[in-house]
Length: 377
Image (cartoon, rainbow, N blue to C red; front, side, top):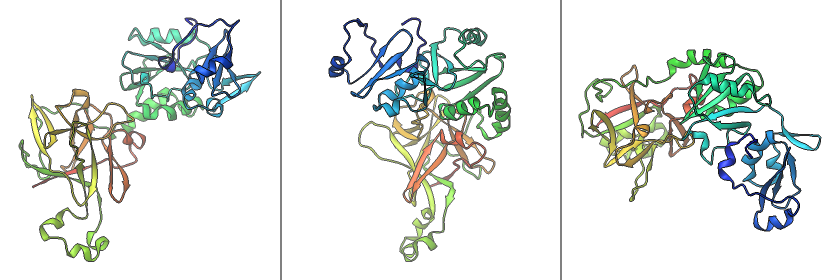
């Protein structure tokens, strides 16, 4: 086992020594519907009684990632058969991961075409030398994953580094493999896109104020109007609009930020909603300003696959805080604390949409991120 390249799915399995002289796959299927039989130069995937599939070890992470879904067709997708063995048709990307890395989550299958090992140094030059000793791995670059940050590093010049998120992983992998881009090209492109990213630095003495520059003091109620979306309520609602009380008409024809309600302590989604929203207020704790609805704080998760806006009880941990940025017109944009992209709006239909912190990464520079106007009450 020590001689095998590790793969990211190893933390989901149990390795059991066997006697190959007495091993009977049919008997084992009664206890284990799906298992891998590891031989010296190849392994065999047994899935739910179907014909076993023999693969080389370079395909192991891909096979194991699909293994849990069952059916041989899923196991062999994106592989090719050579001399009776199913093999990966792309060089493996060597990934180094640190304790707590995003890619170690059991649900992360984005790193199909990889081998990996834990990094015990921050010296990328030393990591590059490890990759050079593995000719079956991609030699032009390697990957590093620390927390939520993924980095591509040029093997021959480790000063060339490109940071990205898990959402971009598959797209970047294919572009690099097809030679449509290089690490340096990605770095150059990022320099052009930097203008679309939020400034992660904190503003000393930050104060919340509306688009007219008037300060919002702690406890003062306000609503958040999504200014990217509006329509004419009179034309869309016809006669119904005339029945709306005069003092309520200001809320119609607009999309508002609305926190869903919950009777327990679970986090609640904070979405966009037509015609009505939630009353928010600010609260400053230890010099940090938080937005709240009742006793809940606006927050998000680090996981790029669950990066929606929530409200939750309890002061958010630093990694889950929301950071506020002022647009040129005085309205505000949101990001995760120190995040690389602004929050964006995922329109879901007539009832509103979801506010997410990762979607903008895929459309950076091509869309107008979520912009909010503070409306005093």
